[in-house]
Amino acid sequence: MSENVIEVRGLTRQFGRKTALNDIALSIPRGEVFGLVGENGAGKTTLLKHLLGLFNAQSGSVTVFGLDPVANPEEVLGRIGYLSEDRDLPDWMNVQDLIKFTAAFYSNWDSAYAEDLRQTFDLQPKQKVKSLSRGQRARIGLLLALAHRPELLILDEPSSGLDPVVRRDILGAIIRTVADEGRTVLFSSHLLDEVQRVADRVALIHHGEVVLSESLDDVLNSHCWLIARFPESLNEPPLIEGVLRGEGEGREWTILCNGKRQKVEQQLHALRAEIVEQRTPSLEEIFIARAGSIPAKQHSS
Amino acid sequence: MQIHVSEADGTPYYTQVVQQIKHLVASGRLTSGERLPPVRKLAEQLLINPNTVARAYRELESEGVVASKRGSGVFVSDSGSPLSTKEKQRILHDRVDSLLVAARQLGVDMDSLLTTIAQRDKKLGNPSTKTK
Image (cartoon, rainbow over all chains, first blue to last red; front, top):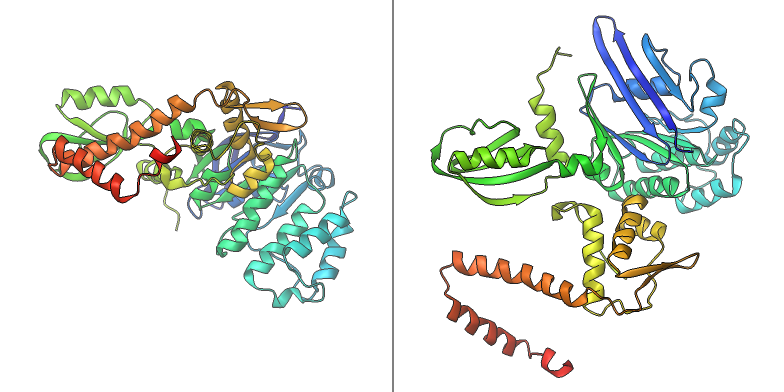
């Protein structure tokens, strides 16, 4: 099956007078890891909550597995594993009871796999959820999201505030999930080096709008850093079409070009500048430049 | 097989995997007939997307460095890594180029550079003359 697991068209959401999502369109193909990136408050969590059927689309449409998640909550949620950003877990339960309690909601719960994960994550059965460390909370949340072997795994800022060991567990879980044929992972993150490691496709959300949604390869290949040396000192970055960002002083300037590299090189040549170095930018550098170059349509507080 | 990938490298992960495996083959650390780790295992080890590893393996296969045998995995080609000479050259060219750039920036001329290389070679005990 190669259809899109998630299809969002023209989704707009207002909270009072604030537009949280504006005309969002996204297609997420089966079997891929999709990274959703953007600043805090850009609208990532709001978008994920629509996919889980927690918000009704005010306008536009949302389908998951070809179904409307609001109209078919059981059918859709039974096939999704979800790790929320705030890891809202019942504090009064212990690990063992929480696993049993969650298992009851899923017909396809895999107890052996749950036990395997519990041991891997070093979670003590009798320990109260309340007394778990931040990292252990993330691990039990991950266990609960994975143990019914969902077709779609949605992780909202899974690595946020966690130490490198737990982050490794989370990345490992993403990799194992997608390595099992046909499974799909959607995760939001502001740790762009992690997104660059595991994502097939990325979307950048900025002030409630999708400003970039492409395969990771296309994003990385279409951008490049050039260090240009000009014949004379410049006081500000050269005005060149296709340049997202320019930094430097005097005769040497580092510029990030967007896609049309040849055109940029021609323009530099016309300015009698010499290209002294070039390299591929990281996703983080691209997104900082992208987000920085887009004027905000409205200011949220 | 031990390889490492890094975001700071400035090349895509799949290129890093391809180049490092070629490097291992060229340097004899992977020999013909040796089996590469399964895609999933290498992906988990490197913490990168399995599709990236699969793509690197496909590229290595299309270049004849490895061959996949249905159901049993991916192996270093029997033909004794057809690219190894070319690949050795490529690796050396990269290193030599950066050395030359450094030498020019430091104002070191060709003769002094060659003398330095010979001196360093002596200091390192020149093991390559023993093996070849």
